[in-house]
Image (cartoon, rainbow, N blue to C red; front, side, top):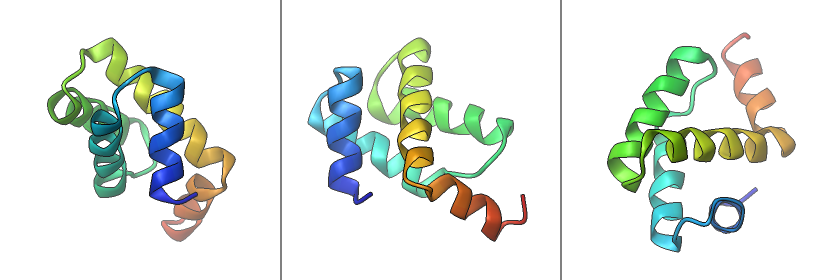
Amino acid sequence: MNPEDFISQLVSKTGITQEQGAAANDVFQGTFLAGEKSKDIIVDQLVQKVGVDQAMAETIYTIGVGLLSSTGIVDSIKSKIGL
């Protein structure tokens, strides 16, 4: 999935703006790691950089991970880091 598709789907599924979607994409690209601790880091960064509250940041995280998982990106990352 290319960044434009990822952003478009995030915007569509969450109701955030295109600009917020681009900021969220930057967070995922810059910090995506498998594991529960990385979820907290990503959610915190979404709150700061996208300008949403904690609940919306968790929604964006869940949908973003779902989008990445559906395209096999998460499995590829996990296999590269040995999970």
